[in-house]
Image (tube, rainbow, N blue to C red; front, side, top):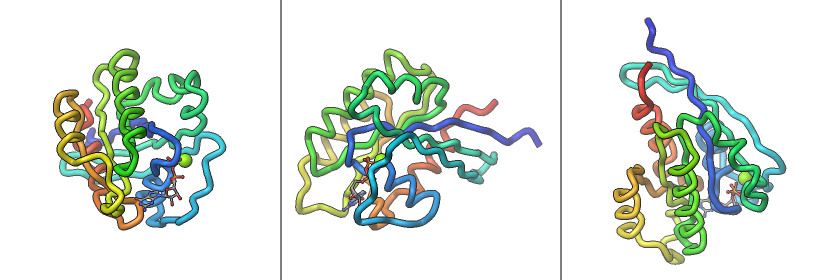
Length: 170
Ligand code: GDP
Ligand code: MG
């Protein structure tokens, strides 16, 4: 039937928050304690079956945008979905995530499905950003929110599946 969808998904967020690790966990089921920092954007594709459709996610794991912000629009242009990642042990990364949200609201595709991921939820004893503050921020800004761990796998599949579910159907 006509229930196949291709969608570009981009990961944005501060360096070191775990963008590459989330993608690696999702696509390959792996985790590296010392993930090499991405030199350039890496591209992965993964097909998911959700209730009413098959969704092929074309995932762009960005790098360089953290330092060279001017590169960013090239990544999110044409994206149907974005995951904005912060690290729950870093308030700075949460503030940075909010800047990404603002930028996408101004410049991104208005129908973009946007998720906020509070990654490294396994590091509870180092937590600086509470679940409550992140959730209320996400609610106010029309994002869906999950706390994830690329290390322990918590919510990694779920966040990608939820994106696939929320993508507008043709
Ligand atoms: P990126 O710069 O956003 O792509 O971040 P990376 O994926 O390169 O991860 C940065 C560091 O954080 C690496 O040492 C990862 O092993 C570590 N890391 C990533 N995700 C997690 C997680 O969920 N929990 C923990 N404890 N460490 C993580
Ligand atoms: Mg990376």
